[in-house]
Length: 309
Ligand SMILES: N[C@@H](CCC(=O)N[C@@H](CS)C(=O)NCC(=O)O)C(=O)O
Image (cartoon, rainbow, N blue to C red; front, side, top):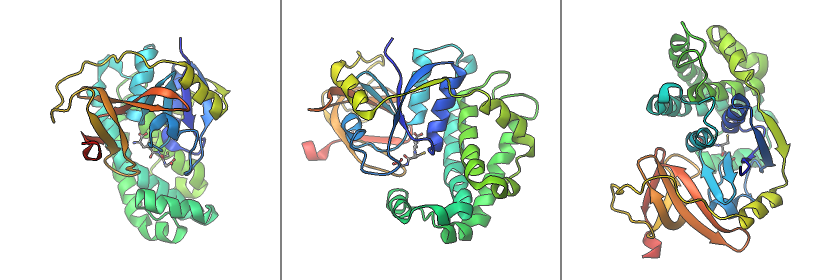
């Protein structure tokens, strides 16, 4: 079976979701340490410009965004499932809500405490990339708002967990890994000060249960080796049905795909297949040959590539 290669960095909260999924499923995986900021010369040949972390690579197939990465890990390694009761819609909707409601508030709660220890060029880069000012001063100014935002989301989460060990019941799901990652980031980086600002008491035993899933068996892989794996592999035949795209786009047509929120670097290439949940485009370059790049539909925009007309 082709190995799972995760391009990520330890500090990345979104990557923590996927590391925990590997833990829950007790998987072996290859870890490629990706830079925390651009340039990312060993990632871009695989992603045609997508630069966010994490990215999952399986041979010459490249999966962007945790929404799709978790689904793909589950498709390849179905037991134990990340979608108990096949509740994909419920799990994905909860995950999308949580990420959008808590990612920046949690990150900025942490930077209101440690913002002055972060290198200025990183802060500068994220300002352009994410339209967020992570300096300690700006984060402190926004702290009352971010605490409110986190309290509101955490109150709903505590309510969901009041009579059960995990969000959907007795088993963990992708929604638990998602709800955990931003709280993990805030408390890991903000320490006791962050903990004192958050209503963690009703969530602590749940957080311990999620942390106990671990990260599976991580093996370090040099970035160049991952590019060689892609070069020596052929993309798999798409497993999704080529549904009629609502905008009429056809396989073979040049398209541009980009995130709808931040880090909106355009990814261009011919469409391979698309359904209601996933888009696959083809990319080719001298370093890796042909790769298929997969994006989720939710959170991304796909349009005909006007530049290629
Ligand atoms: N919706 C994306 C968000 C990913 C994301 O924002 N990742 C952060 C790191 S945790 C990032 O890419 N930051 C910019 C970078 O690493 O270059 C997902 O679910 O994967």
